[in-house]
Length: 407
Image 1 (cartoon, rainbow, N blue to C red):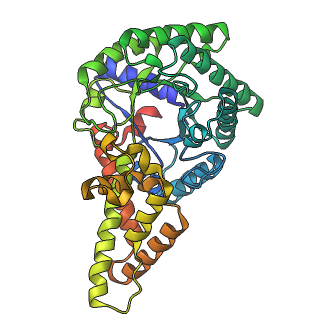
Image 2 (cartoon, one colour; image 1 turned 90 degrees about the vertical axis):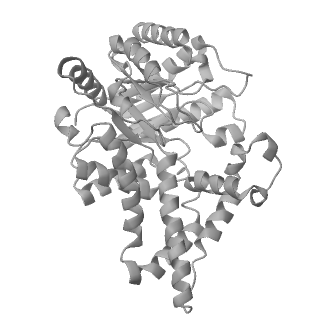
Image 3 (cartoon, rainbow, N blue to C red; image 1 turned 120 degrees about the vertical axis):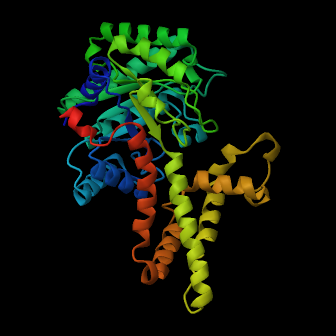
């Protein structure tokens, strides 16, 4: 299978020589249904697909999906066999860096401790067969503000060097890298700092004889975040001009619900991550099924209700993860004290953290069991809803039948 670095080189050539514009899609596998839907979408559109898994989602402790890196890759391959997706699927690490796993911050790990944990996870991901590692040491919980660019570069070099040593020890022929962040952490949003980061990183890799590990992707702010959805064309074009001479392309994060996805390939974006949007689609599909179950119970009062919505709400509440999204005027409030609109937003946003909670799994299974005699396979209806959402990006990014470009 062609490496991602080779794919980036091919995308640049297609753009510069043939006026063919392609952006790669990275789906964040924040649930089993999303993973299945992304593989299904890739198969029926003959499209390559990246899977950007954070340390919170997939890690040695199982993350909130319940998958270790090896289990995640194995599940991806099982879906590939189910849907006939031959090649073109790339498991990737998203945001691999110190304190970017929530429990590292919660447990107030030292720099040495969190670095050791990240390095151990990188080794596990290499063993599992990951193709891309996002190296992102742009957070430092021991200081106020962002670490200087020089510190970000030095820590990036340390993690890349560790990965390369482990790759060689394991006899793995190649792995690609992604660097940078869409956040302001590390001071990389400013274009002068962005260029300085690339210059220092290249020099550092050269000094360590690691230029072969130059990243395929450089992440940068292109106007979108958790609360904004308009892609900045002009910023993307400026960033393209900066990174292409290095043989890399820009990758955007927070592409969820973006208003103008067709502008990504038009502006030379190499890749884009989408995550929370697909969880929201899964959530909406399940809420629709729960409403159908409520209607069914009125005509068939003998069925045992799943109480799926109650189970999900209670699991989100107990997780406490929703508290990090509280606005200043909401601090100290319980989840049920929030306005219905904000509570609904919290449930939809945080559902990805609790899909594997035992009570949610049990309620979901009963929900499906109740509806199956009436509507066939409810699970496949959920998967198809997510697949349709993914295909919106496949179409906008010109990925339909795009595997032919990379053979």
